[in-house]
Image (cartoon, rainbow, N blue to C red; front, side, top):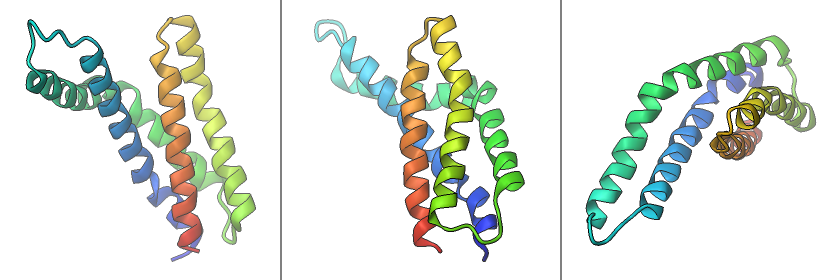
Length: 137
């Protein structure tokens, strides 16, 4: 299979990294707000994991599908048949910058700094994705 079709098909890596990032954030928030006199650790872990998954699939429906759809269309439009490592890296970096801009603006204007965390998670996902695609060449 040619690389230009593998690039959009590797979006599952971004989706999975965002899901894991939301779970880590939820667990961290629950453990920071943990009060041993009121809560049990099992309850906090359960709320952290299940609450994060729930919020990813409910509240995240507004943000993640349009983001992933944009990435898919961007890759279909700008990927070439014979992409080598350097041009693939530039494509993924440009895509990361374009996708990160709205999240950075929302972090500043809405005073919701967790968007910066999601930018970092997206960057980690893109680097994992780049390594995955380089191995498949």
